[in-house]
Each structure stands twice: as C-alpha cells, then as structure tokens.
Length: 157
Image (cartoon, rainbow, N blue to C red):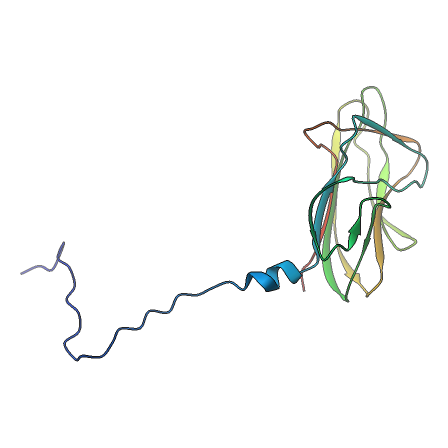
C-alpha cells in the first residue's frame, strides 16, 4: 500500500517535535556599513577633480556617506565593494574616477549625450579612509527622477 498523498502521522513516542526556523538578525544587517545615493538634479556640471555629490540617499547604514560632500568614510577596516554609474548630459561629456583618499583608481568615460558607464572596485579600506567619485575634467551629468547616476559602497568582510 502506497503512502502517496497521505498525511504523515505524528510520532507515537510522546516526544515533542522540534522545528528549528533560522532567523536573520536584522539589527546586525543595519550595522553593516552600506550606502546607495543618486544625483537628482536634471543637469550638474562638475569641474576638474570636483567631487560628484550624490544628493538623493536611498540607503545609508550608519550615516557614513555625506550627500553634502559626496564622501563615504569607512567606519572600520575591511574589504569594501564600491560602484558608480554616471550618465552624460545631452551633447556633453563625463570623465570620472573612483578615488581612495588622494589616490585615483579606476575611471569611466561614458561618452557624449545620454551615455552611461559603470566602474566597480573592491578596495581594502582602513578606518577613516575616504572614497569619492571625482571628475577627470569638466563633466556634465544628466539625471532626473529616474536617477541615472548612482554611487554605492558596502562592507564585504
């Protein structure tokens, strides 16, 4: 006789059944340094070596990103994933780099007019290190309420 489609009977040994349900400690997740911010203005000109200020903050665990300065400051030593996507304004260029303190790292060059480029890095940061996105020359960003230009970082380990 097949047991297919029948309900299982509880054990007959009078011992309670224990079900372990894994949980996530959400407090710990909120403690992980992480942020994502976008440029909200329709067009933004950035001079050479000027810091891009991503003013629309989506996530900012620990408030280590400052939208007024465009600086993410590492709250502790660790391995961080950093990413930025920039979109050029109509008929304009964007040329930029991710900076770690005063050291220029990877660059991006989307080209002219509503073009996007993305740069990603994994950086070993010390406590207090500053990460920014800076223009490599005069750059004109395009953004709107679709938030095309974005900057993010989070602690990996």
